[in-house]
Image (tube, rainbow, N blue to C red):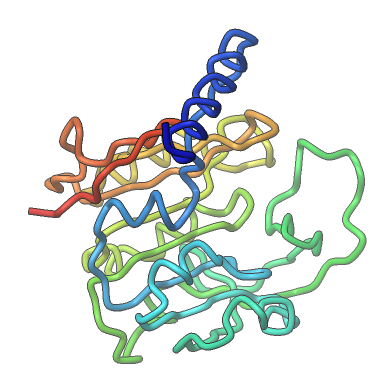
Length: 249
C-alpha cells in the first residue's frame, strides 16, 4: 500500500470515529479549492464589507479586477497584506438601499450599522459615515461584468442588495453572510433575504454554516437558470476522496 492510500485510510478511520461522536467531517466549503469547482467566469469581483480582506475570493479571482467597498478609514491598512498584488479600486463608503448618513459602531470585523441584540456590551466607538446604493457607487466607473459579489455587513446585507438591482442584473453569483437568528434590531428575516434574491432571479446554491455557532451562515446565490443548481453539479469532497470541477453550460 502506498503512503497516500495509507494516509487516506487513516483519515477515513478518524472521520468515522468523529462521526460516531456526533461530528460531521467533510471539506471546508469556504475555501478557494471548493468554490473553484463552480467554475465561475467573471470579470470583476465586488467586495462589500472588506475589513481585513477576503483572501478566499482574492485567491480564486486573483487575475480579475476587484472593487473593494468599506466605510472604515483604516480598511486599506488592515487589508494591505490580503490585497497585495491585486488589481483593485477602493471606494471608502457604506452601501445601502438609499443615499444618506448613518452611524457605524466600530467593533473590528463585527462593525455594524445595526444595533446588536447578540451582545450586551456597548460599542467602544461610533463614527458617522456616508451611505450610497451600490448601483450609484459603481455607476460610470467602467467596471465590466459579469460580476461576482460578496456582502458581509453585519445585519445590513439585505439593505445593501436592495441598492444593487442594476448591478445584480450583471452578476453571476452573490456570496453573502446571512443571519438566521435575530442578531440585530430591525434587521431582515432570513426568509426575506431569500425572497428578495428570488425576485432578482437568484436561487440558493450553497449554505455554509459557521464553525462555532448557529446564529448565521454564508449563503451562495446563483442565477435561477444556472446549471450550478443541477443535483450533482458541485460535489463536496469527503475525507480521502477527490472530485472534478463543474463546467457551466
